Amino acid sequence: METMIAKCGIDCAQCDAYKATIEDSDELRVKTAQQWSKMFGHQIDPITINCMGCQSQETLFSHCQVCGIRSCANEKGLTTCADCPDYGCEKVQQIWNHDGKIKENLERLRA
Ligand code: SF4
Ligand code: SF4
Image 1: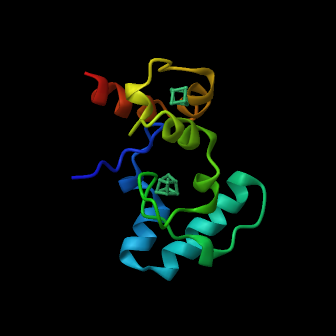
Image 2: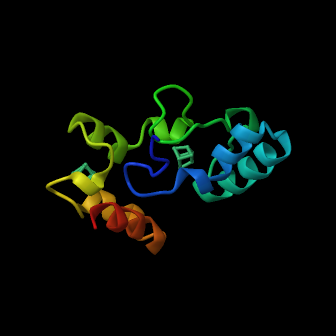
């Protein structure tokens, strides 16, 4: 089964954009857009809350489409940063600093 762990270690299965997409819930799209508009500091339209996870080649939320960690891992042909020789680089540490669980997910893949 394809992993739901993002390149950086985020568990996309727990992400509200993913949940709103698989449940096709407009209520959750609105709630998520409100929360993320505050978090990112600009208005996010609920209709853009559609994502099948970082490993998806098709349906991906706009911010994650332009994610530097995702493109870096893709360029190296890696499923996640867990397999990278430069594991723990400055770029990925920035996102780990938001939530310790993100790094733990990659540590589990490395074990
Ligand atoms: S790739 Fe999609 S599911 Fe994963 S964190 Fe980004 S928005 Fe959420
Ligand atoms: S260099 Fe950093 S961001 Fe790029 S794949 Fe390796 S760990 Fe991930």
